[in-house]
Length: 377
Image (cartoon, rainbow, N blue to C red; front, side):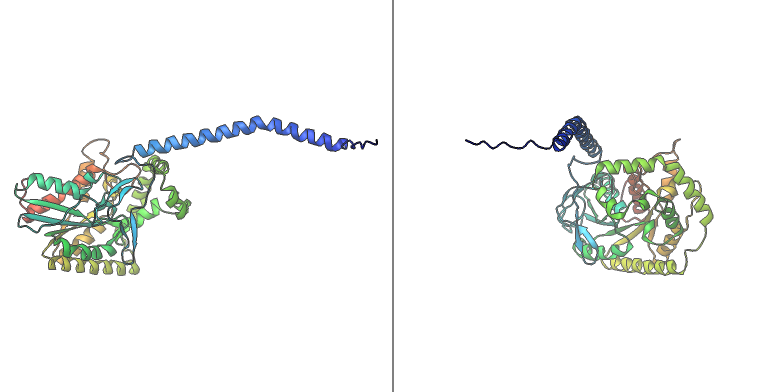
């Protein structure tokens, strides 16, 4: 019987295989360490994200969800009934698409209805719903007005809106609410002006962090509470430097014109505001307008007040009450040393609850002076 003997493998192949095996055995501890390190980093990231979320106002939430639906005219509107977190703010949107509790007007003689128009500074980005200026205004009015008055302030502010949207919002809500008072919270980015140009150059210029991160990446990272905290920390660390640059540019730009193109844009904004006033009065409503200050206007020693005077002059020409907020903010900030913080940490534009209280107090002062509503304080 013949037996077939298998040939021995070439010694070179056998040696190479043993070397590969030996190398893989040596890499196993390293790969294990890398896996553990990766898992540790992931766990640390998750913990940091949860801690950052727990520190934001409102109930705790694990994820951010967009509160907006697309709109062909307004670009986006609040999703009716939405409840959740978005960009560091807890949203509770009623069935009308407004921030705040449900309310259906009764139009009873004792009911006083206020419609608040504006952007994120009217909506109250970064604070609880009870701390935004429309809700603080409502609370203060109810506490100080006659007992038989039923006062409601409807918050129609939406993040990202500007003067272009305010008129359309009035048209959508005005006929159903029939407000006795329309309050328009303008912001410095609603129309072209020197302060806006300085702010953009300092905080959004080519050397800023915002300019170095693509917008699509910023939007995605903005869903993370940890990123929002890190972003705020970065701006907080550079606060004094940015203020110094803003003050220097403000001095250099003081009194300068914004150019013919910007002048045309301002004229268009004036016309929109005139239409808003006309349609508000057609509803039987009084109108008051204010300009929310930037942080730089409040804390810098020198700032250009041309935007304030420009909007004041427009209001005067329209016979509309203008509410000055820059000086009340500056006065409140300087009540202590260091100055009181009236804007959110790492934020340049959105007030704290204390800042929104200044807005509510200023509006109540106007109501009292104009005798639009009897209040005791």
